[in-house]
Image (cartoon, rainbow, N blue to C red; front, side):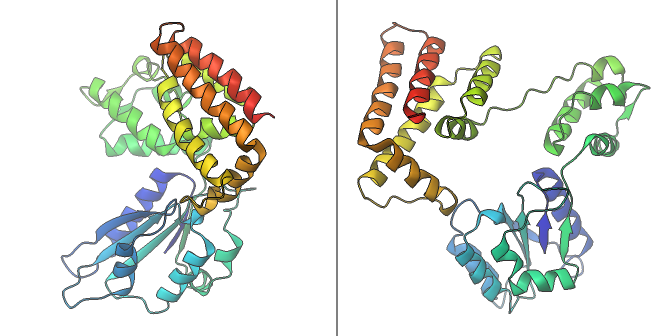
Length: 314
């Protein structure tokens, strides 16, 4: 089964519905095991996919972010799926953003026999991200599952502030269920929902390294308004990145995910030892000024980002 959807919660719901609708044997259920395409698939995945013991239990092998798997890994999967096990049900989840209303499938995946065969057999499930109408429908369906009902105007008030993210919608409705003692949600209760996007430290670092200065500072200002202290998690992540970049610049071969390897090598060459030394100095200066009391964490963060803008913008 190939699942094409950029929304992780919609995808998880779909996998669950497929498994519930097709039990492996009467009065039995599938055991789900989740793997991630952002890292190398472990031996346990290949064993479950290819080995069928005498007492093997029915297993659903769910590979999230499978679009990030290297082409060589996909070729191995293609070979393994040529002789599928009767008690193994793989779900390969391609979660990249869609373009012009269509899922973006990597070219090396489209060419594989397992993908073309799945298309012929209609073993491809796909659904775009939620739009405005989709948010309303999903919120209404999720509320029904929780035994909630909306007073006139409440659903409109809620969907006006909810993002097109199924997981967030589920979480906000679960919170509202605590207030709705009789199961009814009033417009006043719905108006209390105020979604603030979670801070993605990895996305923020990509903004820094990519020289996206305007986006970087907008993110910083938004997080500062929330009162969050970003300096210490950012320093920890930066130190890890600086070590990797230094190893690459020195000609070593640290372990890198294939999806980010080329960008990191380019950054190491572009910064050079001079830029990397400046990066280490900026990090330690930020930490020293906080611990010495010379600057508050917020002031140190502003100064650090100024240094990073200069270093990565070279």
